[in-house]
Image (cartoon, rainbow, N blue to C red):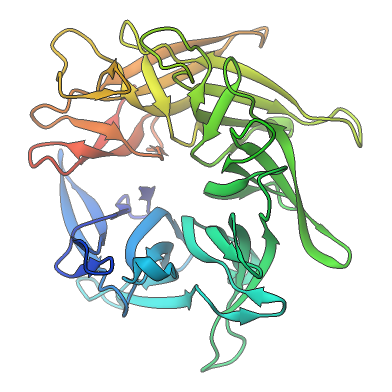
Length: 406
């Protein structure tokens, strides 16, 4: 979810709504929604702003929304209702001219099998978009055709320059090989103003994925190189979310596997939080440090798949999909033999900066109105707390929106 200027929260649901989308008629699912949560005293009211309609308006929105200065929301839909053919779209949702009016959804660009010089355009966008100068949008796709299926791409969408024109897509980089910097990008892009940073969930020397930096070069749109290839236990393995950029260009992130491999964690570990320090001089290598390895025992979490929130005091906040089991926890929650419905955690650096201390802020139970399997993004509430969502749990069993207060 993201926090609007009016104090409302905006987000998407991967499923739900009144329209249904199918995959070659083998299954049918509701196509997803965009929602608004508005505070009303101590309660919150939910308003469905848009129900996706498949081919006409996209389906299965993936990743967070972004908000421009005019209050328009932008995001990505993983498909247009034809999953067997890939596709996907970038969309906008403009607010009504008057309070209580209808929000207007528009598909800005449709991916999939568009002819471009040397091949075809990428498809299946993931992780939302990054809003750049002059309304330009940047993002990642899970797949690419160039000229045959490959492991994803970085794309740029330029807004129309004249009435009646469409948005223009430029493929900035294609992840062609399982070697450096990896394949199958996940999460969102982040930038320091000149360089894009992101994570590939697969590939690299050990097959555990990589963190990459993409920079513009003369004679080509961009080039991407791994700043770290994950090696598996005791290092991380398989990042599943966006990176966070800290002071001095330091990058922070999570991997769903790797780290401690002792029971109850599986042989590929329960996941880690890592830190990447930029090179001290031009041409030198980045250095990586695992600053926390999840254990899945004594209430600790396991299998983080969330982007981290970095606060002004240097603390990191995130979620884990599993772990966090405590007395009375829902026994139905378990992942790879690790019990628990997930956690919200905090990592605080020591004054010397050498060690980090973890605090579990909440153990999800999946019972009553509590959720389970927290989502990939947390949102600061402006008062030291955090908003987030869960994929499951709650009274109806379809997930919750929650707040963690200090």
